[in-house]
Each structure stands twice: as C-alpha cells, then as structure tokens.
Image (cartoon, rainbow, N blue to C red; front, side, top):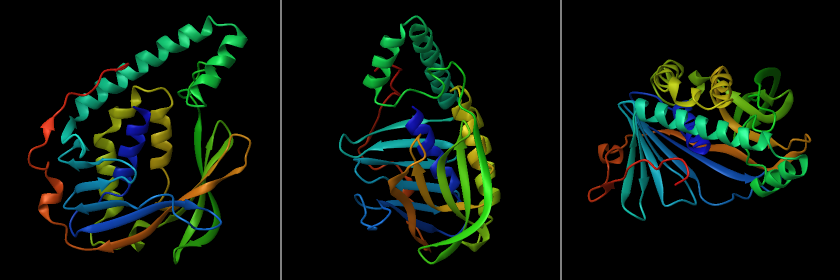
Length: 262
C-alpha cells in the first residue's frame, strides 16, 4: 500500500491540464548514467494522466479523481476513488498498529530477527511506535540536470538526509496550463488517502511543500552514504495525447481491491 500511495503522489506531482505533455523519467547509475531498465512514460492532457512503469506489466490512469491500476498481463484493472483510498489507508494503518503491538511484546533478539526478515521494509515508525518526522529544505545551491538549471532541495527523515532533489519552477516546463495550481488541486482531492498511514501523510505534505518539480532525485542510506542510482527526467515535451490513452482497454475485467494480508 505504501508503494502505491507514493506512486500516486508521483503522478499528481506531474499533473497538468490543457495541452498534452509527455514526461519520460529513468532510473540510472549516478556515475555511468547507464539506465536500469526502460523509461517511465507519463502522458498528461486535460487533467487526465496515463503512466506506464518499466519492469511491470501494467500502468495507471488518473481521471476525474479516480485512479485505475492496470495489469496488462492479466488484462484486469482495479478502481480506486477517494473513499476506497481512505478505507484502504485506514485498513493498512490498523494492520500496522496490530504488528507494532505484537512487536512490543518481543524480546530485543526477536525484534532484531523481525527487522532482518523484513529487509529494512518495516513501515514508518514501526520500531519506535512514533511516526517518522519529515522536513524539506531549500539549500539555495543550484545544479544542472539534462540541461535544466535546478535548485537543490533536501528531504530529511528524522533529521537525517533521505533524498536530494534538483527542482525547477513549474513555469519553466513545457505546457500552457498552471502546473502548480493544478497539482495542488489534485493533491488536495487525495488528501485523505495517506492520512490513515502513520508518517505517510506527513511525508506527502512535506513533499508537496517543495516549490517546483524535481527533475532529479538522488537517494541516501541511513548512514548518510549516497546510493548508486538516481531518478532523472530525461524528456518533457508538449504533444497531443490520443483520448484512448485515458480509457480502460477493451476486454479488461474489473478486479476488487485486495484486503490486507491477501
């Protein structure tokens, strides 16, 4: 659920209305610039979004405040409106609380074993019982990414550097609509989505406070070491998007949202 929420946040952060836009993003090695798989392709037009994610057999469509998650291999889709997202977040939050209560009864050795089994994927605040705290800071420094001059922002979790983002003004990006205004309106419509998950809602709010769009994101380990991979916008062009791109493909069957534990 957490990964899906962050994926939606990424979609919203690039959403506009009016003229069509195509955005391509790659994950690549910081030093060699060799991409890890294909590009993530996002197409936006008239407030609708279609995103295809590399290394998966599907994508997402966002329109009229409803998110459709596609599985091209199985030819199925799931539909998530605001109420579905809210209930899903509440369910996930309840499951996290149950797990936290169980871990509180464990010995230190048992908790360490649980952490090892989870591979660092424990939900925010699971061990401490308190949500992670997030903060964004404009460093005032500048850099260039794929020919775009950008301002360096840092995203800190619990006071430690988590991400370094190179941000450009919305006004500098192709497209005739007010990207920032549209983004905020759409983000507000999904406000309740992440609030049921401890720490996730706070992280989303802090990300939304960044003034601009991140065209490059670099990630850091808990100890402060920079990871080898970065996410970079390689193309952002204005073009007409066929209306069919924002429709569920013919023959796809609707699938119910899975419950926690399924």
